[in-house]
Image 1 (cartoon, rainbow, N blue to C red):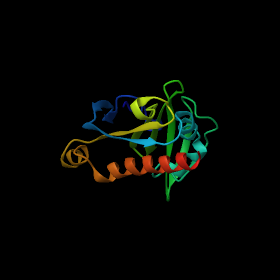
Image 2: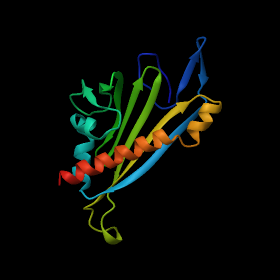
Image 3: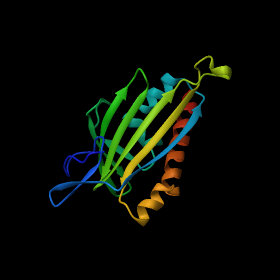
Image 4: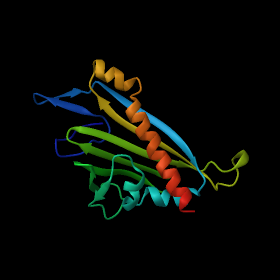
Amino acid sequence: MRRLSSDQLALPDVYYTVGGKHKEAGMSVTFEQHVDINATPEAVWALITDATKWPLWIEQMEHVEGLDAVTPGASFQWRHGNQSGAGAVLQVDAERMILKLATRLGNDERSHTFDIDRKGGFIRVGARDSRVRYIYAYDVAAGLLGKFVAAGNPGDTLRVKNTLQKLKRLAEASR
């Protein structure tokens, strides 16, 4: 991700500004999991692209405001407990059912990509079920802490798993 300025969200390629010069970040980490949902891809897509429902299933996003429509370039504010941050919609591809968001809390920037696959039933026929893949990514500084996070931070692994499980419960209850 690339840092444009302190008041803008990251877009692909993150750089840190040190003394007026751009310095490449230490390393990027990605946490990726998927879940099979007993609901149509269209029903899951409707949940994923409804920002009013995000607090029901996205971990650490208890409140979202300022987003009238989930469209590329739209921005929003979010809150978790007494922490608040900003976010932006980076990609909405209804045909391929991909939604990509960026969130920021202070200087900490994260990307969230949700990708729905029409897995179908037995022998992958039917497209009645959905497989949702969640990719949660961010940059960390090099060093011992960066190596720990890159090796599989259990907190972030659990955050991704919980987000997908909440989405699954919500989608299956809405059927």
